[in-house]
Amino acid sequence: MTDVFEGRRVLLVSTNYAPERTGIAPYSTLTAEHLAALGADVDVLTGMPHYPEWRIHSEYQGRWRTVENRRGVRVHRRRSFVPRRQTALFRAAYETSFLAHGSIRPPTGRPDVVISQMPTLAGGVIGGRLARRHGVPHVVVVQDLMGAAAAQSGIGGGGRVASLVAGVEARVLRGAVLTGVVHESFVDRVTAMGVPGPRVRVVPNWAHVPSPTGDRRAVRARLDWSDEEFVLLHAGNMGLKQGLEVLVEMARIAARDTPRLRIVLMGDGSRRAHLEHLAAGLPNLTFLPPVPDADFPDVLAAADVLAVTQRASVLDMSLPSKLTSYFASGRPVVASVAADGGTAQEVRRSAAGVVVPAEDPEALHGTVAGLMRDPGGSAALGARGPAYVRQRLSPEAGLGRITAMLSEALAR
Image (cartoon, rainbow, N blue to C red; front, top):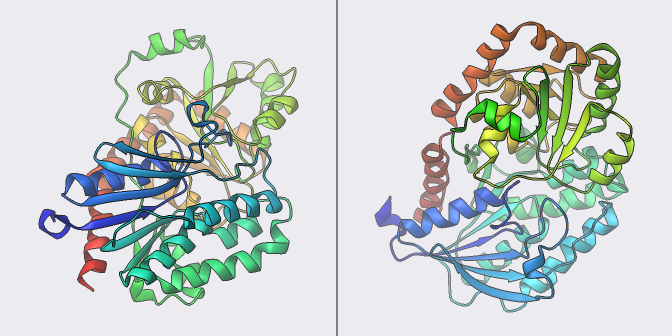
C-alpha cells in the first residue's frame, strides 16, 4: 500500500477538520494524516473550525484564509457563514459561502486524486470541479445523505428544498469514480440516485478514541455522580435530527418514578439552549460541556448506559459517529431510533445495546429502568461493544478500507 501513495498528491475536501473533535472531522483528519504517513503529499481544503458549537473557534475569529501544517498535512482554511440556528435558508447560506470562498484560489498544483467528505454539498461540488479540471479521479465518502437529511431531519423549510438538494447531491455522486458510504442502509438510496452499484463501496467509520483507562469511581466522583445514581449519558452534538427532547420528557417521568436515575447531556450544538430551557427545574437532568479528548473515553465508561437518539423520521440519511466511541467504552447502548434505520441495524448487529421506538419517552424510560434492575444483563450488553470494535471497527480496518478505495480509483 505504501508504494501506491508514495509521491502521489492527494486533495481532500471537507468543511470539517481538526481541531474539531466530533462528527466527521476526526475521520477527515485521520484519513489525511494516514495518507501522509504512507508517503502521499496531502492538501486539505476545509472551513474554519466551528462544530459542534456552530460558532467559529476563538483562535480563528477574524481570519478569512489560513494555511497551516498539521502532522504533515497542508491545511487550507476558508471562512464561510456559520449559522447559529439551523434552517434551510441558513444552511443554504452556509453551503453557498463555502462553495464561493473555497472555489477562489484553491490549493495549487495538480492532484492525482480528489476525495470529498460529504454531507456538505459544497465540498462535493468543489471536489468534483477540481477533479474534472485536472482530469483526475474524484472519490466521495458519504457520511450523511443531504437530500434525505433535508426531508427527514426536521430542519425548518427542509421539505421544500429536499428535491433540489437531492438533485445536486445525485449529480456529484454520479460524477465520482467511486462512492463510499458509511453504512449498508445508504446503498439503496445512492443507487436510486443513478450511481451504478459496482461503483459503491461500504466504508464504515471506525472507533477513533482509545479504550478507557481511568478509575471509574474516581471519574464519577469528579463529575459529582454518586455511587447510588444510575447515569444515562448522551454525548455529542445537540442538533435537530437527534430529537433530544425525548430525553427531557424521559427525565420528567424518571423524576417521579425512578429518582435514582440521572440523565446527562454532554456536548454542544444548535439546540442546546432550547433543551436547557425545556429542562429548567428538572433536578435529575444536567448538562455538561464537551470534555477534552484525553478524558472522553473515561467519561463514557463512567456512565451506566449511553443513549443515542434520533427523530422518528430519520431513517437512511445518517449514522451517528458517536456509536463507534460508545461501543469502545464497554457500556450498554440504548437507541431511541426508527426501527428500520441504519442506526438500529448497527446497534442490533453489535449486540451491545437495545433499540426502543423513537420519540417515545415512556418506552425509553421502561428500557432504562429494566437495565437498572438487571446489572448483570446490563454489564453483559456493554461487554460486547469492545469485541465488536475489534472485529469490525478498528482504525486499521477503517483506514484500510479507505486507502483500498483510493488505490482502486488511482488504478482506474
